[in-house]
Length: 177
Ligand code: AR6
Image (cartoon, rainbow, N blue to C red):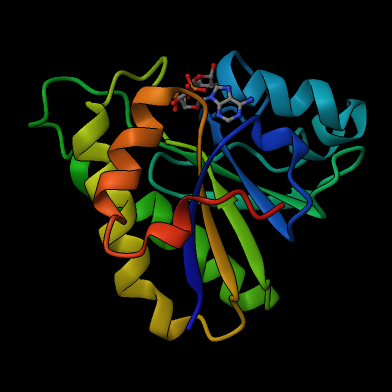
């Protein structure tokens, strides 16, 4: 079964089978990690995204990685936090699940997730991290192709939250790529 890792870095630098993008429903780019991914991938990514007809919240769609070191980008649309009673936790869980279903279909071996919805969409960080780790752990047995799942934290704060959730295995804190 795959190993879970947590790293603090820019996800656009990772050489993995797929990096996950925290996109919006248009899939046509934006700020935050979405902006960084489109900037690094180049216009080919935008052109492919424009053919996808958007994406529902809680769902995900895959493209090629273009100029990124990653082979693919899985564009997931997380929920905007509106207080917690608008199905936000389930929608966030669904994002992680859909990304791993795509990883299974495409037989990916390495995948890197950003902290979906915890920036511009304001999902509380600890709650989001718990959902991310629990959902990935639940799904792993059903995605046999995966060797490594990386949780990529841009901020020190998120890094520490994930580290404490994955504490039982301190080696997980080491950068791997
Ligand atoms: N590498 C890794 N993580 C990053 C990077 C990076 N280069 N840049 C930011 N983060 P956000 P959301 C972290 O706002 O909350 C866009 O406009 C950031 O610190 O990117 O899901 C989309 O188009 C945070 O922890 O995504 C949508 O409209 C996490 O990535 C909207 O923002 C997610 O923050 C989506 O908002």
